Image 1 (cartoon, rainbow, N blue to C red):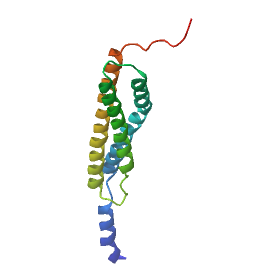
Image 2 (image 1 turned 45 degrees about the vertical axis):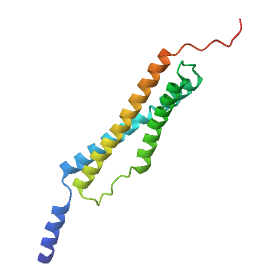
Image 3 (image 1 turned 90 degrees about the vertical axis):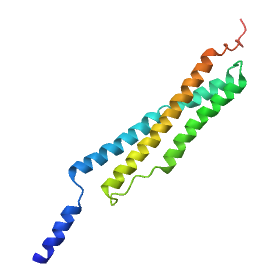
Image 4 (image 1 turned 180 degrees about the vertical axis):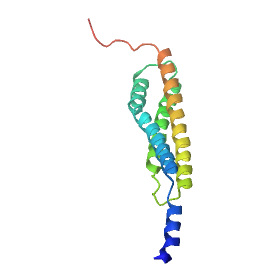
Length: 137
């Protein structure tokens, strides 16, 4: 029985502390919450792209650039989603925390793409003349 005491002490030391587990859970939750908030905006990207395609802006080249920027933001999100992998529980806690920190930086970058592309598209649409009405009286 005494032979197993050092083994038990070693196993106890290897376990992740509850504080660390809470940090890991919070870090993962923050990354996924950022993802979820951006996913809620995906329809807006599509809608703005469609509005730019239908609008008659004075500068069609600018409209094309803005549509590509919106598409780039959407592609950035897809790129992030396809590469995100939750680290296995067997990975050391500091490495998992570093992974979540890196993923947070990446999803924040995607957020900036979302914001800048939407803001600039809305500005262009606000400056575009209204479409002529196709309904007859």
